[in-house]
Image (cartoon, rainbow, N blue to C red; front, side, top):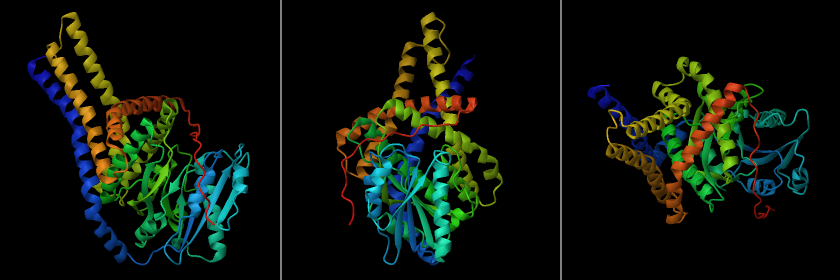
Length: 442
């Protein structure tokens, strides 16, 4: 290999390394500037978009063996209030629980709480099927009541979720625009007193928030499993089963809405909190499921390319989101392989042209270390600026642990590849941690 080829390889390698921090800086701009400057435009667009303000909210809580958290989740959901003149109800789908979940729910006596019990063999067919059963029930009640489905909004709050009290007001504000078919609120972590919890709150509260703000500008907002709200009429366009058996049924639902031309908005002015997974093995299992679900959604690439409803810049962002796990996995292998080859070449006395000396190897390692550490530190500063509800030292520890968190995500991606190749689709539910009980609303 000549000097020119080695120089090209070195330039390509550094370009790959620097792409990440450069992308991070762009997202930080959206995190710090876009939300404030875009809010007035969003409000004006909503006011100009007609009178699509919802009149009725249903909050669905899918519950499978949630005895540790379901009482708090239901209590928090019953406290949610929309604007004056709107109604809200909570529908818990007990999907065949065999713990104390039915007893906990039976002890909650509230006129706006509805419990749907599903038994085997219909139960335990996945979160998507549980949501579909609740959706069909709500559709039937809406039709019997003679209500317009475009005035009914269906929200999803997971078994460990707790929404901020203004969540329905914010969603109602966004959906005043009749063109908006769904909205996603910000997600935060409650048990962030542990390091893994703090890292996950850094991820959701800063990084995901910035990504969603950028996607809000590009009209590519994605729906999450927690804190998503959809018009009933938008769901009805997708048939009797809007949610599928995909391992990330929320992400797939968002893609199908975009293909239908329905707008999805994002707001960080309201939030839903959830529990962090603080066990490494269970966290890897959760991220493996997410990565595999992302791979399953790759089947929509052809439809996205051919859809006249998806703008070219929106298509580019969606492609980046769908293909980035595959690209990250390949780039990581290439970088690790290059480092090992360079080290081996120096040890046997036949160094590679682009790593000719030990000094060059140390410099390359230093650049890699700086590139992987810089984004976490920057996101910790963003988190402090936007929220300010965590100590500086805890956020610093989370930032320094962030590269290891990414390595865990890469390991999950490789596991997901293996599962997808072998045809394994089943997944285990994330276990919950017991929390202090909250007071139920009167």
